[in-house]
Image 1 (tube, each protein chain N blue to C red):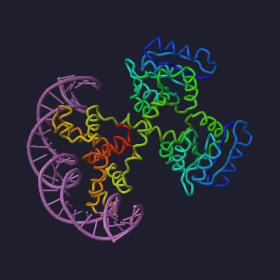
Image 2: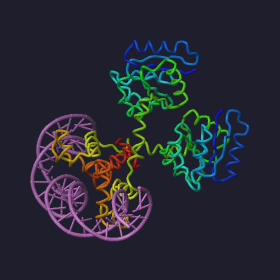
Image 3: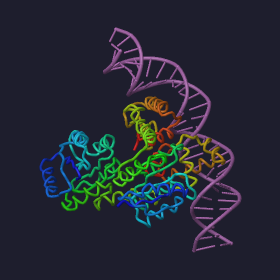
Image 4: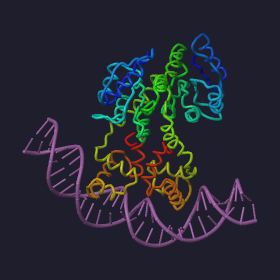
Length: 206
Length: 206
DNA sequence: CCCGGCATCGACCGATCGGTGGATGCCGCG
DNA sequence: CGCGGCATCCACCGATCGGTCGATGCCGGG
Protein backbone atom coordinates (compact mmCIF):
# COMPACT_ATOMS: atom_id res chain seq x y z
CA UNK A 1 0.00 0.00 0.00
CA UNK A 2 1.40 3.33 -1.08
CA UNK A 3 0.49 6.12 1.32
CA UNK A 4 0.00 9.49 -0.40
CA UNK A 5 -0.32 13.05 0.88
CA UNK A 6 -2.00 15.71 -1.26
CA UNK A 7 -0.65 19.24 -0.84
CA UNK A 8 -2.53 21.97 -2.70
CA UNK A 9 -4.14 25.21 -1.66
CA UNK A 10 -7.30 24.59 -3.67
CA UNK A 11 -9.79 22.24 -1.96
CA UNK A 12 -11.36 21.50 -5.31
CA UNK A 13 -8.08 20.27 -6.73
CA UNK A 14 -7.50 18.18 -3.62
CA UNK A 15 -10.90 16.58 -4.01
CA UNK A 16 -10.27 15.89 -7.64
CA UNK A 17 -6.99 14.19 -6.87
CA UNK A 18 -8.48 12.22 -4.03
CA UNK A 19 -11.14 10.99 -6.41
CA UNK A 20 -8.53 9.88 -8.92
CA UNK A 21 -7.15 7.40 -6.37
CA UNK A 22 -10.50 6.28 -4.97
CA UNK A 23 -10.63 3.04 -6.92
CA UNK A 24 -6.95 2.26 -6.81
CA UNK A 25 -6.33 -0.64 -4.44
CA UNK A 26 -2.61 -0.15 -3.83
CA UNK A 27 -2.75 3.61 -3.21
CA UNK A 28 -4.22 5.25 -0.13
CA UNK A 29 -4.67 9.00 0.28
CA UNK A 30 -3.46 9.32 3.85
CA UNK A 31 -4.10 13.03 4.19
CA UNK A 32 -4.28 16.51 2.71
CA UNK A 33 -2.62 19.84 3.35
CA UNK A 34 -3.42 23.34 2.16
CA UNK A 35 0.06 24.88 2.14
CA UNK A 36 3.73 23.95 2.15
CA UNK A 37 4.29 24.23 5.87
CA UNK A 38 1.34 22.03 6.69
CA UNK A 39 2.44 19.67 3.92
CA UNK A 40 5.83 19.10 5.53
CA UNK A 41 4.48 18.49 9.02
CA UNK A 42 1.70 16.22 7.78
CA UNK A 43 4.08 14.22 5.62
CA UNK A 44 6.28 13.59 8.65
CA UNK A 45 3.38 12.96 11.04
CA UNK A 46 1.56 10.54 8.76
CA UNK A 47 4.71 8.83 7.50
CA UNK A 48 3.59 8.88 3.88
CA UNK A 49 5.51 7.42 0.96
CA UNK A 50 4.67 9.93 -1.76
CA UNK A 51 3.68 13.58 -1.62
CA UNK A 52 1.76 15.23 -4.45
CA UNK A 53 2.93 18.80 -4.22
CA UNK A 54 1.66 21.97 -5.85
CA UNK A 55 4.24 24.73 -6.25
CA UNK A 56 2.35 28.00 -5.93
CA UNK A 57 0.97 28.02 -2.40
CA UNK A 58 0.58 30.44 0.52
CA UNK A 59 2.79 30.43 3.65
CA UNK A 60 5.42 28.17 2.13
CA UNK A 61 5.89 27.52 -1.58
CA UNK A 62 6.35 24.05 -2.92
CA UNK A 63 10.06 24.25 -3.70
CA UNK A 64 10.82 25.36 -0.18
CA UNK A 65 8.60 22.60 1.17
CA UNK A 66 10.53 20.04 -0.89
CA UNK A 67 13.78 21.26 0.60
CA UNK A 68 12.40 21.05 4.13
CA UNK A 69 10.96 17.62 3.47
CA UNK A 70 14.22 16.35 2.05
CA UNK A 71 15.82 17.19 5.37
CA UNK A 72 13.00 16.01 7.62
CA UNK A 73 12.08 12.83 5.75
CA UNK A 74 14.56 11.91 3.01
CA UNK A 75 12.70 8.74 2.06
CA UNK A 76 9.55 10.55 1.03
CA UNK A 77 9.09 10.94 -2.72
CA UNK A 78 7.78 14.24 -3.90
CA UNK A 79 5.77 14.42 -7.09
CA UNK A 80 5.33 17.99 -8.23
CA UNK A 81 1.90 18.55 -9.71
CA UNK A 82 1.55 22.03 -11.09
CA UNK A 83 -0.62 24.03 -13.44
CA UNK A 84 -0.07 23.55 -17.13
CA UNK A 85 0.98 27.09 -17.87
CA UNK A 86 3.85 27.33 -15.40
CA UNK A 87 6.61 25.03 -16.47
CA UNK A 88 9.47 27.29 -15.53
CA UNK A 89 9.87 25.87 -12.03
CA UNK A 90 11.16 22.52 -13.17
CA UNK A 91 14.79 23.18 -12.38
CA UNK A 92 14.35 24.56 -8.85
CA UNK A 93 11.94 21.77 -8.00
CA UNK A 94 14.20 19.01 -9.27
CA UNK A 95 17.23 20.60 -7.65
CA UNK A 96 15.28 20.78 -4.41
CA UNK A 97 14.75 17.06 -4.64
CA UNK A 98 11.48 16.41 -6.42
CA UNK A 99 11.21 12.86 -7.72
CA UNK A 100 8.85 13.81 -10.49
CA UNK A 101 7.28 16.77 -12.21
CA UNK A 102 3.85 16.51 -13.79
CA UNK A 103 1.27 18.95 -15.06
CA UNK A 104 -2.27 19.03 -13.71
CA UNK A 105 -3.73 18.06 -17.06
CA UNK A 106 -2.12 14.63 -16.74
CA UNK A 107 -4.71 11.87 -17.26
CA UNK A 108 -5.64 10.09 -14.00
CA UNK A 109 -4.27 6.77 -15.20
CA UNK A 110 -0.89 8.36 -15.96
CA UNK A 111 -0.97 10.00 -12.56
CA UNK A 112 -1.51 6.67 -10.88
CA UNK A 113 1.38 5.14 -12.77
CA UNK A 114 3.49 8.13 -11.80
CA UNK A 115 2.75 7.66 -8.11
CA UNK A 116 3.77 4.01 -8.33
CA UNK A 117 6.91 4.95 -10.20
CA UNK A 118 7.78 7.70 -7.73
CA UNK A 119 7.29 5.21 -4.94
CA UNK A 120 9.89 3.01 -6.62
CA UNK A 121 12.20 6.01 -6.75
CA UNK A 122 11.95 6.42 -10.50
CA UNK A 123 11.95 9.83 -12.05
CA UNK A 124 8.72 10.87 -13.66
CA UNK A 125 8.82 13.86 -15.94
CA UNK A 126 6.22 15.43 -18.14
CA UNK A 127 7.61 15.69 -21.67
CA UNK A 128 7.83 19.47 -21.43
CA UNK A 129 9.62 19.25 -18.12
CA UNK A 130 12.03 16.70 -19.50
CA UNK A 131 13.01 19.18 -22.18
CA UNK A 132 13.89 21.76 -19.54
CA UNK A 133 16.28 19.34 -17.89
CA UNK A 134 17.82 18.14 -21.12
CA UNK A 135 18.93 21.64 -21.92
CA UNK A 136 20.43 21.93 -18.49
CA UNK A 137 22.38 18.72 -18.77
CA UNK A 138 23.50 19.22 -22.32
CA UNK A 139 25.22 22.51 -21.65
CA UNK A 140 28.37 21.08 -20.14
CA UNK A 141 28.82 19.11 -23.34
CA UNK A 142 28.28 22.02 -25.66
CA UNK A 143 30.56 24.44 -23.89
CA UNK A 144 33.80 22.73 -23.15
CA UNK A 145 36.83 24.06 -21.35
CA UNK A 146 40.05 22.33 -22.19
CA UNK A 147 41.45 19.91 -19.63
CA UNK A 148 44.11 22.43 -18.68
CA UNK A 149 41.67 25.28 -18.29
CA UNK A 150 39.43 23.17 -16.11
CA UNK A 151 42.40 22.15 -14.01
CA UNK A 152 43.33 25.76 -13.44
CA UNK A 153 39.75 26.75 -12.64
CA UNK A 154 39.43 23.95 -10.12
CA UNK A 155 42.52 25.11 -8.27
CA UNK A 156 41.27 28.68 -8.31
CA UNK A 157 37.97 27.46 -6.86
CA UNK A 158 39.97 25.81 -4.10
CA UNK A 159 41.51 29.13 -3.19
CA UNK A 160 44.83 29.11 -5.02
CA UNK A 161 46.32 32.38 -6.28
CA UNK A 162 47.72 32.52 -9.79
CA UNK A 163 51.17 32.03 -8.34
CA UNK A 164 50.11 28.99 -6.34
CA UNK A 165 48.35 27.45 -9.33
CA UNK A 166 51.50 28.00 -11.37
CA UNK A 167 53.62 26.22 -8.78
CA UNK A 168 51.24 23.29 -8.50
CA UNK A 169 51.08 22.79 -12.25
CA UNK A 170 54.81 23.42 -12.79
CA UNK A 171 54.22 26.21 -15.32
CA UNK A 172 54.65 29.95 -15.17
CA UNK A 173 52.22 32.46 -13.74
CA UNK A 174 51.87 33.99 -17.19
CA UNK A 175 50.40 30.77 -18.51
CA UNK A 176 47.90 30.69 -15.69
CA UNK A 177 46.75 34.17 -16.60
CA UNK A 178 46.37 33.16 -20.23
CA UNK A 179 44.38 30.07 -19.31
CA UNK A 180 42.14 32.11 -17.07
CA UNK A 181 41.57 34.68 -19.79
CA UNK A 182 40.37 31.89 -22.03
CA UNK A 183 38.12 30.60 -19.25
CA UNK A 184 36.63 34.08 -18.82
CA UNK A 185 35.95 34.31 -22.53
CA UNK A 186 34.31 30.89 -22.70
CA UNK A 187 32.18 31.33 -19.61
CA UNK A 188 31.37 34.94 -20.46
CA UNK A 189 32.55 36.37 -17.14
CA UNK A 190 35.04 39.02 -16.14
CA UNK A 191 36.74 37.71 -13.01
CA UNK A 192 37.79 34.56 -11.24
CA UNK A 193 35.01 34.60 -8.67
CA UNK A 194 32.36 34.68 -11.38
CA UNK A 195 34.23 31.96 -13.26
CA UNK A 196 34.10 29.73 -10.20
CA UNK A 197 30.41 30.50 -9.81
CA UNK A 198 29.64 29.68 -13.42
CA UNK A 199 31.79 26.58 -13.15
CA UNK A 200 29.63 25.24 -10.36
CA UNK A 201 26.36 26.30 -11.92
CA UNK A 202 27.25 24.58 -15.19
CA UNK A 203 28.37 21.46 -13.39
CA UNK A 204 31.97 21.84 -14.53
CA UNK A 205 33.18 21.94 -10.95
CA UNK A 206 32.23 20.01 -7.87
CA UNK B 1 12.89 -11.48 -7.31
CA UNK B 2 15.71 -9.01 -6.76
CA UNK B 3 18.55 -9.51 -9.22
CA UNK B 4 21.98 -8.73 -7.74
CA UNK B 5 25.43 -8.24 -9.26
CA UNK B 6 28.54 -8.70 -7.12
CA UNK B 7 31.50 -6.52 -8.04
CA UNK B 8 34.73 -7.19 -6.14
CA UNK B 9 38.27 -7.97 -7.21
CA UNK B 10 38.65 -10.80 -4.69
CA UNK B 11 37.08 -14.11 -5.79
CA UNK B 12 36.94 -15.23 -2.18
CA UNK B 13 34.87 -12.23 -1.19
CA UNK B 14 32.58 -12.80 -4.16
CA UNK B 15 32.07 -16.40 -3.12
CA UNK B 16 31.37 -15.35 0.43
CA UNK B 17 28.74 -12.89 -0.69
CA UNK B 18 27.18 -15.35 -3.10
CA UNK B 19 26.88 -17.79 -0.24
CA UNK B 20 25.15 -15.22 1.91
CA UNK B 21 22.30 -15.03 -0.58
CA UNK B 22 22.14 -18.77 -1.35
CA UNK B 23 19.16 -19.47 0.88
CA UNK B 24 17.32 -16.22 0.27
CA UNK B 25 14.27 -16.86 -1.90
CA UNK B 26 13.64 -13.31 -3.14
CA UNK B 27 17.26 -12.50 -4.05
CA UNK B 28 19.14 -13.95 -6.99
CA UNK B 29 22.84 -13.38 -7.65
CA UNK B 30 22.67 -12.76 -11.37
CA UNK B 31 26.38 -12.37 -11.93
CA UNK B 32 29.82 -11.32 -10.73
CA UNK B 33 32.50 -8.91 -11.90
CA UNK B 34 36.14 -8.45 -10.94
CA UNK B 35 36.58 -4.76 -11.57
CA UNK B 36 34.63 -1.56 -12.05
CA UNK B 37 34.58 -1.59 -15.84
CA UNK B 38 33.31 -5.14 -16.00
CA UNK B 39 30.84 -4.27 -13.24
CA UNK B 40 29.26 -1.51 -15.29
CA UNK B 41 28.94 -3.58 -18.45
CA UNK B 42 27.62 -6.62 -16.62
CA UNK B 43 25.09 -4.56 -14.69
CA UNK B 44 23.75 -3.20 -17.96
CA UNK B 45 23.90 -6.52 -19.81
CA UNK B 46 22.21 -8.53 -17.07
CA UNK B 47 19.71 -5.84 -16.19
CA UNK B 48 20.19 -6.25 -12.46
CA UNK B 49 18.34 -4.34 -9.75
CA UNK B 50 21.09 -3.96 -7.17
CA UNK B 51 24.87 -3.88 -7.45
CA UNK B 52 27.10 -4.75 -4.51
CA UNK B 53 30.17 -2.66 -5.23
CA UNK B 54 33.63 -2.70 -3.72
CA UNK B 55 35.54 0.57 -3.94
CA UNK B 56 39.19 -0.34 -4.24
CA UNK B 57 39.48 -2.23 -7.50
CA UNK B 58 41.79 -2.43 -10.53
CA UNK B 59 41.02 -0.88 -13.96
CA UNK B 60 38.15 1.22 -12.67
CA UNK B 61 37.56 2.12 -9.03
CA UNK B 62 34.13 1.81 -7.49
CA UNK B 63 33.29 5.49 -7.31
CA UNK B 64 34.01 5.93 -10.98
CA UNK B 65 31.95 2.84 -11.73
CA UNK B 66 29.02 4.28 -9.78
CA UNK B 67 29.19 7.44 -11.84
CA UNK B 68 29.24 5.49 -15.09
CA UNK B 69 26.43 3.27 -13.93
CA UNK B 70 24.30 6.22 -12.92
CA UNK B 71 24.50 7.40 -16.49
CA UNK B 72 24.13 4.02 -18.19
CA UNK B 73 21.43 2.58 -15.95
CA UNK B 74 19.93 5.13 -13.54
CA UNK B 75 17.47 2.66 -12.04
CA UNK B 76 20.16 0.35 -10.72
CA UNK B 77 20.79 0.65 -7.00
CA UNK B 78 24.40 0.55 -5.90
CA UNK B 79 25.26 -0.74 -2.48
CA UNK B 80 28.84 0.04 -1.59
CA UNK B 81 30.44 -2.77 0.36
CA UNK B 82 33.92 -1.89 1.47
CA UNK B 83 36.57 -2.95 3.96
CA UNK B 84 36.05 -1.91 7.54
CA UNK B 85 39.14 0.22 7.82
CA UNK B 86 38.46 2.56 4.92
CA UNK B 87 35.49 4.72 5.74
CA UNK B 88 36.81 7.88 4.16
CA UNK B 89 35.20 7.24 0.77
CA UNK B 90 31.66 7.68 2.00
CA UNK B 91 31.20 11.15 0.60
CA UNK B 92 32.52 10.52 -2.91
CA UNK B 93 30.54 7.32 -3.16
CA UNK B 94 27.29 8.88 -2.03
CA UNK B 95 27.86 11.91 -4.20
CA UNK B 96 28.50 9.57 -7.11
CA UNK B 97 25.10 8.05 -6.49
CA UNK B 98 25.49 5.10 -4.17
CA UNK B 99 22.22 4.06 -2.55
CA UNK B 100 23.91 2.57 0.45
CA UNK B 101 27.27 2.23 2.14
CA UNK B 102 28.07 -0.80 4.25
CA UNK B 103 31.20 -2.33 5.69
CA UNK B 104 32.27 -5.86 4.89
CA UNK B 105 31.88 -6.95 8.51
CA UNK B 106 28.12 -6.45 8.21
CA UNK B 107 26.26 -9.59 9.37
CA UNK B 108 24.70 -11.53 6.44
CA UNK B 109 21.16 -10.97 7.69
CA UNK B 110 21.72 -7.20 7.79
CA UNK B 111 23.20 -7.40 4.34
CA UNK B 112 20.11 -9.14 3.03
CA UNK B 113 17.87 -6.52 4.58
CA UNK B 114 20.09 -3.86 3.04
CA UNK B 115 19.71 -5.31 -0.44
CA UNK B 116 15.93 -5.35 -0.07
CA UNK B 117 15.98 -1.78 1.21
CA UNK B 118 18.26 -0.62 -1.57
CA UNK B 119 15.92 -2.25 -4.05
CA UNK B 120 13.13 -0.12 -2.63
CA UNK B 121 15.33 2.92 -3.11
CA UNK B 122 15.95 3.44 0.58
CA UNK B 123 19.26 4.66 1.85
CA UNK B 124 21.25 2.17 3.83
CA UNK B 125 24.16 3.49 5.81
CA UNK B 126 26.50 1.84 8.24
CA UNK B 127 26.47 3.84 11.48
CA UNK B 128 29.99 5.08 10.91
CA UNK B 129 29.14 6.13 7.36
CA UNK B 130 26.04 7.91 8.58
CA UNK B 131 28.20 9.98 10.86
CA UNK B 132 30.33 11.09 7.92
CA UNK B 133 27.28 12.37 6.12
CA UNK B 134 25.75 13.99 9.17
CA UNK B 135 28.80 16.14 9.54
CA UNK B 136 28.58 17.11 5.93
CA UNK B 137 24.93 18.02 6.08
CA UNK B 138 25.07 19.74 9.43
CA UNK B 139 27.73 22.17 8.36
CA UNK B 140 25.45 24.55 6.52
CA UNK B 141 23.40 24.77 9.70
CA UNK B 142 26.29 24.99 12.09
CA UNK B 143 28.34 27.46 10.13
CA UNK B 144 25.98 30.20 9.22
CA UNK B 145 26.71 33.32 7.26
CA UNK B 146 24.41 36.18 8.09
CA UNK B 147 21.70 36.98 5.56
CA UNK B 148 23.63 40.03 4.43
CA UNK B 149 26.89 38.16 4.02
CA UNK B 150 25.18 35.47 1.99
CA UNK B 151 23.54 38.12 -0.16
CA UNK B 152 26.91 39.70 -0.90
CA UNK B 153 28.53 36.34 -1.61
CA UNK B 154 25.76 35.38 -4.01
CA UNK B 155 26.24 38.57 -5.99
CA UNK B 156 29.99 38.03 -6.06
CA UNK B 157 29.38 34.51 -7.35
CA UNK B 158 27.28 36.03 -10.11
CA UNK B 159 30.21 38.16 -11.20
CA UNK B 160 29.63 41.47 -9.48
CA UNK B 161 32.58 43.61 -8.40
CA UNK B 162 32.55 45.16 -4.95
CA UNK B 163 31.37 48.41 -6.48
CA UNK B 164 28.53 46.70 -8.31
CA UNK B 165 27.45 44.79 -5.22
CA UNK B 166 27.46 48.05 -3.31
CA UNK B 167 25.22 49.68 -5.88
CA UNK B 168 22.80 46.78 -5.97
CA UNK B 169 22.45 46.68 -2.20
CA UNK B 170 22.38 50.47 -1.80
CA UNK B 171 25.29 50.53 0.62
CA UNK B 172 28.90 51.66 0.32
CA UNK B 173 31.78 49.71 -1.11
CA UNK B 174 33.45 49.78 2.29
CA UNK B 175 30.60 47.77 3.76
CA UNK B 176 30.93 45.19 1.02
CA UNK B 177 34.57 44.76 1.85
CA UNK B 178 33.76 44.34 5.50
CA UNK B 179 31.09 41.76 4.76
CA UNK B 180 33.46 39.86 2.52
CA UNK B 181 36.17 39.89 5.17
CA UNK B 182 33.72 38.25 7.55
CA UNK B 183 32.82 35.71 4.88
CA UNK B 184 36.49 34.90 4.37
CA UNK B 185 36.97 34.41 8.11
CA UNK B 186 33.95 32.16 8.45
CA UNK B 187 34.69 30.03 5.41
CA UNK B 188 38.42 29.96 6.14
CA UNK B 189 39.49 31.27 2.75
CA UNK B 190 41.57 34.19 1.57
CA UNK B 191 39.87 35.49 -1.56
CA UNK B 192 36.51 35.87 -3.25
CA UNK B 193 37.02 33.05 -5.73
CA UNK B 194 37.68 30.56 -2.95
CA UNK B 195 34.72 31.95 -1.01
CA UNK B 196 32.46 31.28 -3.98
CA UNK B 197 33.91 27.78 -4.29
CA UNK B 198 33.37 27.01 -0.62
CA UNK B 199 29.91 28.52 -0.84
CA UNK B 200 28.92 26.05 -3.52
CA UNK B 201 30.63 23.10 -1.89
CA UNK B 202 28.86 23.76 1.39
CA UNK B 203 25.54 24.22 -0.31
CA UNK B 204 25.27 27.86 0.70
CA UNK B 205 25.03 28.93 -2.92
CA UNK B 206 23.16 27.55 -5.86
C1' DC C 1 21.81 48.56 31.43
C1' DC C 2 25.77 46.99 29.28
C1' DC C 3 27.81 43.80 26.12
C1' DG C 4 28.15 41.51 21.83
C1' DG C 5 26.63 40.62 17.20
C1' DC C 6 25.32 42.82 13.06
C1' DA C 7 25.41 46.33 9.57
C1' DT C 8 27.19 50.37 8.10
C1' DC C 9 31.12 53.60 6.66
C1' DG C 10 36.09 55.60 6.08
C1' DA C 11 41.16 55.60 4.88
C1' DC C 12 45.38 53.71 3.63
C1' DC C 13 48.68 50.56 1.19
C1' DG C 14 50.70 46.67 -0.89
C1' DA C 15 49.52 42.66 -3.48
C1' DT C 16 47.08 40.65 -6.89
C1' DC C 17 44.42 40.54 -10.78
C1' DG C 18 42.52 41.67 -15.48
C1' DG C 19 43.50 43.53 -20.18
C1' DT C 20 46.31 43.91 -23.96
C1' DG C 21 49.50 42.70 -27.36
C1' DG C 22 52.55 40.00 -28.38
C1' DA C 23 55.67 35.42 -28.90
C1' DT C 24 57.05 30.25 -29.41
C1' DG C 25 56.40 25.24 -30.09
C1' DC C 26 53.57 21.18 -30.77
C1' DC C 27 50.12 18.60 -32.98
C1' DG C 28 46.33 17.14 -35.87
C1' DC C 29 43.52 17.91 -39.88
C1' DG C 30 42.53 18.92 -44.41
C1' DC D 1 52.36 22.01 -46.13
C1' DG D 2 49.69 25.50 -44.00
C1' DC D 3 46.22 26.45 -40.79
C1' DG D 4 44.07 26.46 -36.35
C1' DG D 5 43.77 24.93 -31.59
C1' DC D 6 46.28 24.26 -27.52
C1' DA D 7 49.79 25.19 -24.13
C1' DT D 8 53.45 27.72 -22.83
C1' DC D 9 55.83 32.25 -21.80
C1' DC D 10 56.91 37.64 -21.42
C1' DA D 11 56.03 42.70 -20.27
C1' DC D 12 53.42 46.53 -19.06
C1' DC D 13 49.68 49.10 -16.69
C1' DG D 14 45.55 50.49 -14.50
C1' DA D 15 41.94 48.63 -11.72
C1' DT D 16 40.54 45.98 -8.18
C1' DC D 17 41.07 43.51 -4.21
C1' DG D 18 42.69 42.08 0.51
C1' DG D 19 44.48 43.52 5.14
C1' DT D 20 44.24 46.45 8.77
C1' DC D 21 43.49 50.07 11.46
C1' DG D 22 39.52 52.61 12.83
C1' DA D 23 34.47 54.35 13.70
C1' DT D 24 29.07 54.66 14.38
C1' DG D 25 24.32 53.00 15.25
C1' DC D 26 20.90 49.44 16.17
C1' DC D 27 19.13 45.68 18.59
C1' DG D 28 18.46 41.84 21.65
C1' DG D 29 19.95 38.82 25.53
C1' DG D 30 21.91 38.32 29.95
